[in-house]
Length: 448
Ligand code: SF4
Ligand code: SF4
Image (cartoon, rainbow, N blue to C red; front, side, top):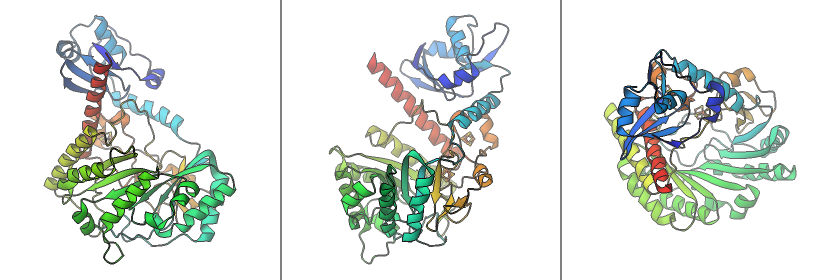
């Protein structure tokens, strides 16, 4: 038996090591994932984040059948929570650990903020049919509100802050970005920024402004397929627009200037088959130059858009099967990151970390970027309503959570309208973990 990943410090500080008693009976923890490899089985514990390699015999006899109740290895498995007492309520134990660590992880009730997502506008130039903002009110930030946003940030900012430009399409109203950034610089507030954009208008902004005034470090740009599919999906407001070519050129321009790109591939039943080709095109065009970019695929959100997107069961099976294959392809090509097995994060996102706010074009605020018309927590002009903020803390709990191997690493929020939990999403998440287990194991073999 061999330890491949030793971790778990914070969990052990709370739970300690489990006592091993001859009169007790033990069973495998339901937080363990076993993966067959050449030398035996890898066992990864999703709560302690430790991983072991066992021989086939150890796996069968020690782990599954718990034969050798008094041997050193058996005690190790018990002490490190791979085996738990028959009567153990692991779900309750895990929820308690997460609750304590989450409170330590969270910010200080929005007294000080480290991340501001700013919607320069809710207008967009691309009119994607699947947009979750379809039907929402359209409005753009004025220069006066932009000045007020900068003043609000200077009153509430932590010493180090990041800004994220969001929309709609943030570049449709990029003038206010410059106003906010210049005012923050004048007030000596250090910041960097990122942007979520369709990428079409980057050639309309001076690169020097983006680098030195906006301090733009990373952009997230979505692609919907190869050229024909992309242009058929987007409905740019400009006549005769070849959006695909223009966006690809803009990505190249940004990368060459040292701005990183995170390219999101929106997967639908119509485009999923050609995404591997698109990955090759992107890699061929931008790879091998030392430019920093990554690619991550994601199925489109169901229930949004015009008409609201729905997959049939067969379509969903198909899209998720291809999603897994695409993720594996990206990992093989080094274009996406492995799942981080030792990552300890007990908050879900901006909505529950109490360090982030979302500022709308008129100055109202929410804490979830998917809520631009409702769920306001206040505005830059008045106090934050902590009752609304705290209403986001409740976790999503469904009957499947009780026996879910992902529970220790799952922080999904009850109010979140984007992150679903289905058989498909769980299968995908577990697949990423299994891939990362094999990756860590292979690295450990190379290190020997
Ligand atoms: S992945 Fe789904 S079933 Fe598992 S713990 Fe999270 S919400 Fe519950
Ligand atoms: S949509 Fe869900 S995951 Fe995204 S910020 Fe809102 S609550 Fe968080």
